[in-house]
Amino acid sequence: MRNWLVLLCPCVLGAALHLWLRLRSLPPARASAVHPADHLALFPRWKSSHYDVVVGVLSARNNRELRNVIRSTWLKHLMQHPTLSQRVLVKFIIGARGCDVPVEDREDPYSCRLLNITNPVLNQEIEAFSFSEDTSSGLSEDRVVSVSFRVLHPIVITSLGVFYDASDAGFQRNITVKLYQAEQESFEGTIVWESQDPQGLASRNLHTVTVNDGGGVLRVLTAAEGALPHEFMEGVEGVAGGFIYTIQEGDALLQNLHSRPQRRVDHISNLHEEDALLKEESSVHDDIIFVDVVDTYRNVPAKLLNFYKWTVETISFDLLLKTDDDCYVDLEAVFSRIARESLDGPNFWWGNFRWNWAVDRTGKWQELEYPSPAYPAFACGSGYVVSRDIVHWLASNSGRLKTYQGEDVSMGIWMAAIGPRRYQDSLWLCEKTCETGMLSSPQYSAQELSDLWRLKELCGDPCQCEA
Image: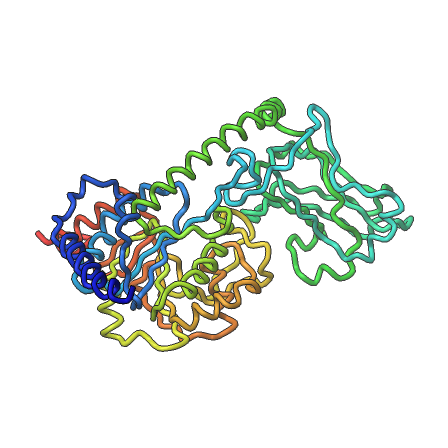
């Protein structure tokens, strides 16, 4: 038996060597012969073991056109660059799931909460924030001077009210109730009560005030003051007691509610189609990271934290650059500036920082969780760079970090806990404008991004060509 093995071993080795040489001599397959996805499956793309910079591009699921423009402009230039192609890894960050609530049926277009209207009362007046007599007797101790409310469908306010303590004396001074629209902080209506009003609920009819989707505030103040001083909290005689309203455009609201079931069926079907397109796009380009969140604007901070976790678990790197899919980015300029300014080292954050930025309480950037009137310093979202140790800290604490209304302000709040070395650089532009030498600029359409890059390649400057 041993003699047979001795004779067979050279034969087996020779056959293996012959097969290897034959495979090496095969001509390369033409690009058109194999589908890109199959090509990737048969021949895995070898990646560098370490990257100088990892680029995360926050992208919405339906922004395929913007992603393709990036692939055909600055990302294509990067992949063809003789040195940068080995030093940089670029990934688009997309939520793994779409919102299953149609946009028309959400509380707002930035979240995934169902608009909670089921059985509206039409063609009659409705009283909001009413109190019983027993409840109103203790109101003077509450020190409440305002009632805030949200409007989910346009209404017409016909009366405003105010409660006072249940003593026989009534109001001891003139009381004014003013209705504000929260976004503008402007007066929408004013009612003045005479003192000694004998009723527990003093109310007067308004000329009808229409309040559209949004928010409002009822505030009580003395007629003499005409403003809202903080010290009025002390010694106030009454509280804003609600209002009476009717629903505007009730027939349109009912029609919208009746069509909800079919709209949801159509929306779920569209989501399945979107999933299939994203799967195909990912297999072709191999540049998408799907993170485990529902893809809405309010969830962008969670998308970012999930990407940080993926990065530290998967890749060796020195710096991380975050940008958005509607931004022009010049990675060559970024690398040149890193080398010229020695922008590296631990606990490092490089961006264009906004300081003492006022907190918005309404609109797209509505902040309901952060109590202070201004945010800590944060880098505007068109682009910024952080060091590896900061990314590791964010990833390891992601389960304990609270997310706020936007990823840029959330990042600023998180960074306030560790006090990074900030490097201020105005070439990370915060607004949609073009400056020679800029590192990034935000809020462009796909066509505008193509035009910027065309000028960049033609003249070396995305903003202009010299005559």
